[in-house]
Image (cartoon, rainbow, N blue to C red):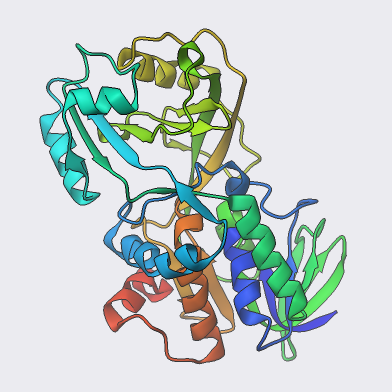
Amino acid sequence: MNADILIIGGGIAGISLAARLAPHAGVTLLEAETSLAHHASSRSAALYEPRYGSPTMVELSLASGAFFHAARGILSPRGLMMVAKPGEDEVFRREAGHMHLQDISLDDARAMVPPLHPDLVAMAAYSAEAWDIDTDLLIQGFARDARAAGARIVTDARVSEISRGAAGWQVETPAGLFHATILVNASGAWVDQVAMLAGVAPLGFTPFRRSMARIPAPDGLDVSRWPMIFGAGEAWYAKPDAGALIVSPAEEHLMAPHDAWADDMVLAEGLARYEEMVTTPVTRLLSNWAGLRTFAPDRTMVIGQDPDEPSFFWFAGQGGQGFQSCPAASRLAADLILGRSPDFGPEVLAALSPQRFR
């Protein structure tokens, strides 16, 4: 099966790029699992807070705002609150300033989140400029657009071999052989493994596990209007989720690429940090899960042609910010692949280019 462009990886990166490219080229997307967005993309906290992340990731997230706010039903109001204990002043001030949060009184914080502990919460800051992302609606919208423009999306197509010949790339999967002129590596935690299969030098991507626990709403309260809550230093976070709360220890534990699961001890430690800041103990878990957030060595996404093999294109390293940056990141990747002038300046392009590692 032939295509102009073959995308390996059906998470939010791959499927958003397929939608951008399909009106202009023959596109095939290969996903190893039986459904799209099975791994990190299906386990995201799903928040659009564009000031979170490295400066370049903030640029991509801010540039994605017009898309999100114009798309019907993708965003819904959430808000973001940071709380801190006594002695956490320095990290609280630094992080609140970076994310443009405004100081609020403890009374105002408890009006929004009544179980906050009156003795242990010493500082609070808040911004209304954070929104929930309907990730399923976003993924399915990109997939629908890609298919409508002629893209072929193939699941159960785990890549086993990749070779490069005079006619282009050949990729072997259980679903068959695929050929293309340009190969896009959007394979998440497996991005360096795919590169090595293709004979391309890896860039040093690192997957880190992040765990989540879903717990009942404290004291049966209506949590639907609560903001997402961060502990200073991102020691934990909590977010309303369909009448319950998801709480994460916000850990970064180095992992080999795999179908991740939560560690009970890590969850217990994170839940204890959350419990310290509220008056309601956690009595049971409804469910738990984990995902892998994959970073480049400098923790900024990689978008661009490989310096040694220009027909191999990197689109990876979202580091947990794939959803909130995907509209602008996929547009930029498509511009570079199609030879169009990108909307971003040379500083941003250089910060994203794989050439920075060679």
